[in-house]
Image 1 (spheres, rainbow, N blue to C red):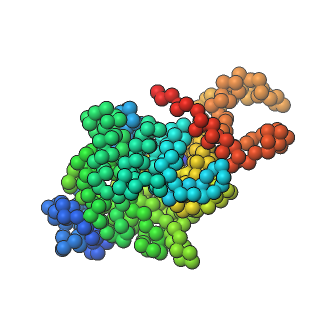
Image 2: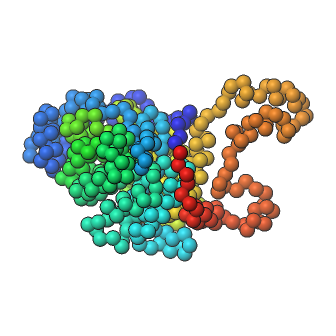
Image 3: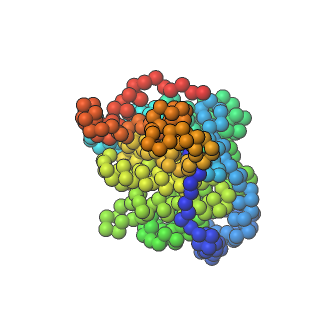
Length: 457
């Protein structure tokens, strides 16, 4: 977890007010489609204008839903202990879900994902200190479709005790996965206090809330599972090509899910966010990387913070097809952006190829990026010990601090000790095998996967 002392903003107060006003107008005038009978009934009873499946939601319903939603969401680990407190500026990083392909670190070959990949990503995530929660990272091609998400979850919970963010297609799988999670935690009551799960259902942009999506929202409210109802839109595709327009539509889609959830199950856990990509109109591909997705998504996070809700974002991913310099640049910039933004639940660490492919080595490198970013955003101590006037006085002009007690007392705290970055001189690097960052990441992945699971406190 990172709690940044250094922050930045994408939106001014005036821009936040303009986006909010535009969102309310969109919800009241254009409205949205809701394709779920109980969801429509919840909205009708709340006072929304319902005409068939077209729903127009007034600002008073949004305001009431915001009053009912909790300011913080607690997630627990597999042992039933609170592990993540989503809210404020506390930043937690985790992996992503359902990649069709995996880039094999040994062969360099992009291949179809299999169930063993889910296990390996969960095992590696359990060992990496910068990864706070897990998602499947692979859509296994060797599992029957009707059992896909159940097998994913069983593999994840067997290999890692960290909280799980999950996806499903069939709403009935929510109940089955909930039963498995409760069995792991030990009791229904403990699971409700610190749920081991958070579901990631999505609306369909633009402005559609399908039967399955709304059913998941309502099921999770019944079962005490928090959700992030996060649109995954594409500017120029199913969202406006302008950043502000994409943010307005995203917020409107999120609010529809929030209103349904809070009027059906007041106080249910809700994480506010949506990940906006941009459609490259020359290739029709979703562009994940800077400068588009991180900044537009950060604007959505800032809207969520304005409303006082926990927030959802993405980082540690890339449009590169291999783990290369582009992947490193994308991972570093997106991770720094998410941390400076104070986003609470940051997923997709370890993705490449615009979310189609996952990589163990990319995950390991991004874990190192998270460690570096954590140091960058922690700010600077300025207490008497950090100002070091006594030490400077002892050393005096022309001296050195190598043997001074102040250095011995502080260097471990102040210095960053890398796991993958290489700070050595050329000769030492060469004598150690002239290894690239990817070489070192590959070795670290093998070492961690071969080691016993780390002890948990």
